[in-house]
Length: 403
Image (cartoon, rainbow, N blue to C red; front, side, top):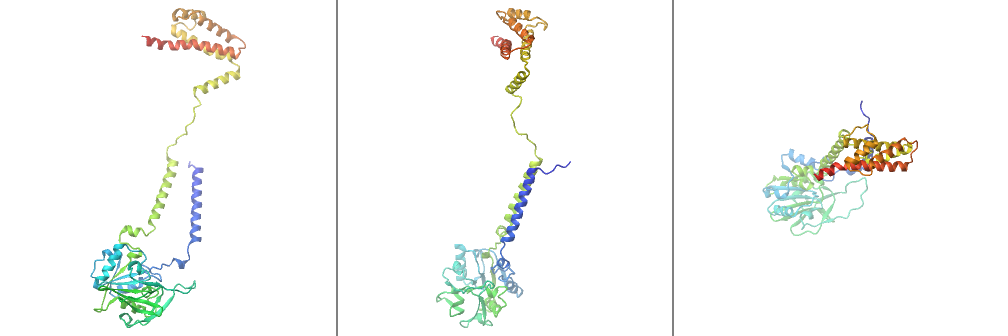
C-alpha cells in the first residue's frame, strides 16, 4: 500500500508553494512598464528603436567591410589608415591600457566614430558640456533637434538636415577640433584631429539607430561618415560591442546571461530533492533513550511490587532459597538437606563460626511461615542472608589470588 505524505513533507510543500506565489505576485506588481524595458544601447544586436541593427545590416548588405568587434581595443591589430572604429555610446569604462590603445590607434592614422557624451571617459582631453534640457513630457522619449552644416564639410554631401536626440553640446574648441554641425548653443558634430587620425564625435547615435536613421538626411550623413574621403573608398569598419558588455569569450558571454542564477536554482532544487529522498528512503534510526531495565530501576520496581502486595515473606524466601542453593553447590550436598545440617557443614568446611549459617536459615524459615512479617524485620533477614551469600561469591576469587 502506498504511504501518504508525511506531515513534515507536507509542510515543506506548502511553504514552497507559498513562496512561489509570492515571487509570482512580486514579479507582476514590481515589473517596470514596457517602455522602461526598452534598451537605450545602440547595439548592432538590438532591433529596438534605440538599437543599431538596421544600420549594421544595411552596411553589410551594401558590401561594406563591416564586422562586430567584441575584444579589447588592445587586440585591435589593423591598418589604422584604412580602419573606422565605431564606438556608439559605449558605457563600460575602459582600463588604462585600453585608453592608451585607443589614443595610439588614432594617433597612428585610425578613425573613430564616437557618439554620446561619455567621450571624456575614453579621451580625457575631450570637452563636451552637458546641455541644459527643458522638461520632457512623459509621453516623449527624446528631444529631437535638427542641425545644418556649420561649415562646408565632407559629411554635408546630401545631408543638409541631420536630426539628433540631443544629449550634449561640445565645449570650447581647440585648434585641432572643428565644429561641423551645430547651432548658436554649441557644436553637435565635431571633427578632432589627433596625430595622423581623426575622432568624429556626434552628440548622440540617432543617425545610426533603427528609429533615427530614417529621419531627414540621417542615412546619407551616416554613410558619409563611413566613407574614407581621402581615397573615396569605404573604411574597414569595426563596430565595437566590447564596451556594450559583449565579450568574445564563453565566460564573458555567460556572465551577462541569467545562467548563473539558473544554475544556482538548479543546485538548490537538486539539494531539496536529495534531502527529501534521503529522509524518506534512508535508514531509520530510533532515538536513544534511557533503558527501562537498569538494575536500580528493576530493584525499585520489584520493591514497589512487594510493598504493595504486602509480601515481605516472599522477599525473605527468595534470599533464603538463594543462600541454600549456593551452599549446597559450594559444599556439593543434596538439596534436601536440613537447615541445621547445612549450617553445621558450613561451619566445619567453610570456617563459619557460631553456627551463623544455621541460625540465619532457621530464622528465615520461621519468618517465611509467619502469617504477617513486618517490612523492617524482613529487610534485616534479607540483608543477613545476602551477606552470607556474598561471602560465598567472593571466596573463589580470593582462593585464586592466594594460589
